[in-house]
Image (cartoon, rainbow, N blue to C red; front, side, top):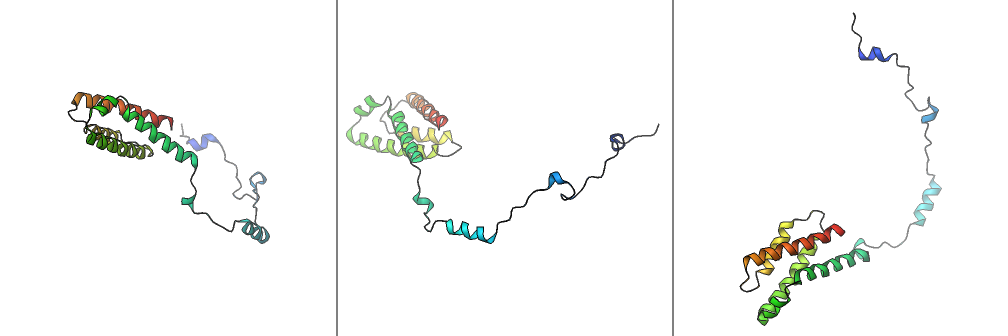
Length: 156
């Protein structure tokens, strides 16, 4: 029995036209822009150009600020008693470091890929300012605050 190739079993292939002029269904109209239309389009362009830095969408700025406030609230939650028990110098240092930490975390949250380790390190470094902090308390508060902050990203 002679072998039949796959191509022979399909049958004859009819001549398919190679150019679009031979097939009316493939004829595509080419739209050419005349010189008059080009002149009209050029004259319609605005005379003044605004720099991209000057344009800021308010929704992006507001969401960044709102997220920053929420991060500060998450960081400050459940630490009021500890804050009030600190000496005045430590309170100032703790508040200033907390604001800086919230700002850094907020900038990290803008990125598409968030590195959770950086957020954890920032929060730990900030909580270590508390005099005589228990390491178990430190770990627990760091995890709670990191989880709350990560929930913010899911809503963006």
